[in-house]
Structures are given as C-alpha cells and as structure tokens.
Length: 342
Image (cartoon, rainbow, N blue to C red):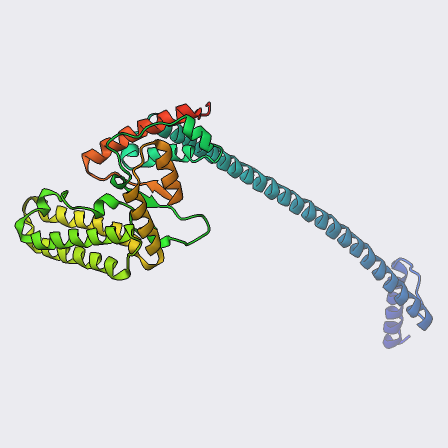
C-alpha cells in the first residue's frame, strides 16, 4: 500500500471517530408549510404577549385615572370646605361688625337723648335727635295742645341757625343745602361786632343795613324782586371788600371780620332763583309770628324742612341751645315719649 493511500485512509478513519464521538441529535428537516406555520405561531405568540402587556397597561391607566379622580375630588372638597369656612368667618365678622355698629348707634342715640356731650349740644346733633322724636306723625294736634311746653322766653326763631334738609329722592331746594338758614345773621342792624363798627366801614355797613331792611319789608308785602336780593348781595360784597382793607390786621381782627361776613354770605344762598319764593315766605312767616311753644317751633321746622345747625362761636347761642334742649326733653316727657330699654 502506497503512502498516499495510507494517508487518505487515516484521514477518513479520524473523521469517522470524531463523528462517532459526538452525541447523536435529530436532524430537523424544514419545509415551506412548516416555516409558514412556525411564523404564524410566532405571530400569535407575539400578539398574545402584546394583548397581555396592553391589558396590564390599561389596568395601570384605569387605576391611575381612579387615583387622579379621587385626588381631584378630595382637593375640590377641601377647597369647597376651605371656602365655606372662609365665607363663614367673613359672615361672622360682618355680623359682629354689624352688631357692634348697631350697638354703637343705639348707645349714641340714647346718649343724645339723655346726656349729650357739650359738642353734641352746640353742633345741633342732640337737638336734632329730640326733634326727630317730636316729629312723630302719631302725635296729634290735640296732644300738642294738651301737653304744651313753653320755649325759653328770650328765644325767637330768627335767633336760631338752621340747615335745610331736602326730601329723599328729590333735588328740590338743593341750593339751600349749600348754605344756612340764619335770619338773625342777615339782620345785623344794631348788632354788629366791635371789629366791624369802626369808622372806616360805616358807610358800607349802613348801606347793607338799608338793603336788608328793604328785603325784609318787601318779603312782608310779598313784593320781593330779584333786584332787591341782588342789591343785598352787592352791599355785602362792598362791605367785605372795604373791611378787608379798613379792619386792623393785628391781633386777628381782620380774619375775624372776614369769617363773620362769610357766615352772613352763607345765609344769602336762600335767595337763589330756585328757592326765591321759599326765602320770601320764611322771612315773612318769622316776621309776622313769634313762636312761644315747643310745638310751634317743631311745626315751623317741619314745614320748611329744617334741622338745627351749629350754634357758632357765640356763647349766647350755645347757652340758648342748652336751654332749648331742656325744653325739648320736657316736651317729650309730657307727650309720654320714653326711651327704649337696653
């Protein structure tokens, strides 16, 4: 046997030995149909896993949505409860404030009618509180006649200072609210203060007195004309101009003169065109009639829609307000008007 043949046999034997030494395994034979079925099986298996994971995802989403809903619902409930609590506290504070304000008003109303402060007397607030009680429409004419209370003997309607109060919801007489109804301030003849009695303004002062006498007399005769009111207004303007130069500036005399004349000017507002007849009637009424009883004063003030105004700096007017307050209290007692219990 040649060497080449022996080499080939040795190689073949070695391969056979190697093959026999390997574990035996079955050999899969593939076909087209088999590959198709195996592919379909793989697809179905993938779809199954997809549905499984998709179901898990939907379960997670549903659970998450439920938790979000519950959380939102809880938040909304908390917000609602907080808002209700805030509104409750606000309402309680408002109620407390209203109760406090009402209590304060009741205490003030009671004090004005029993023990007013000096300032409440001089500014007319206390008198207006009693006036409101005495204007009760339930009080009859017979009641007033039986329970008559005299006014202080030195009191006249012309000596009092009033303010006009228009009826609610109307502008009738609105111009009167800008000034005062103080007839004694218009009529200054023989009553001028010392700082306006100086010789340097004597002519202007007399011209004003004459202008007012003319207005008063024309009112009594029901013949007041616009030219009469304008003459009075111009006379006061000339007096103010002259006093601004002639009254000494030292020690505040000129300032006092200016303030005094400005008070007179405020009283002239009733001669406005819209309330001209009102001015004529009230001057005529007070000139022809002198009230002697509290009831007469109350009727007068109700007729002309008046309230008491500040008594001013004149000590005599402040003292008059105090005595008038006592008369009003006496009138309430005679009429049987009592203060409400606490």
